[in-house]
Amino acid sequence: MGRHIFNTYFLHLHRKYKLDGCITDPFNSLSDDYGNREDQYLRHALGLENKFAKQNKICKIITAHPSGKPVQNEDGTLRHPNQWNLSGGNMWNNKCDNILSINRPNYIINGADTKVEFHSLKIKKQKLVGIPGMILMDYDRKTKRYRDWE
Image (tube, rainbow, N blue to C red; front, side):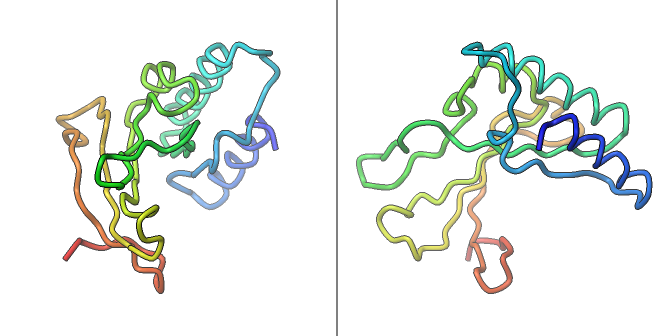
């Protein structure tokens, strides 16, 4: 489904049900024809997403997965991805108000480990939203929710 069709459909639902926001997951699956100029595609697409969210006063969450192979630390844990690990990283950093990262550092060592790092990498309006940082959380598989790390 293309981005334009998705936003048209969401706008209909927003008006009918008074929704506060939506999630596009994953953004990588939406595409337009910009040839090999991914930076131009991202500049255009992310600009439209930002404008759509502001015009309709909604929260627009976009997920994107890192490109390439995960980077391991010396102890075998996974290094958390950041905006530059996304394909077209500079444009993500330029166009997005907030950039967050969820990392399972022990995934390669022990796939059953539920420890999660939640990183806020970029926060545009820090007085309103908060400051960049990291907290540890636990993923509860039964409820499919995150909770405070114990």
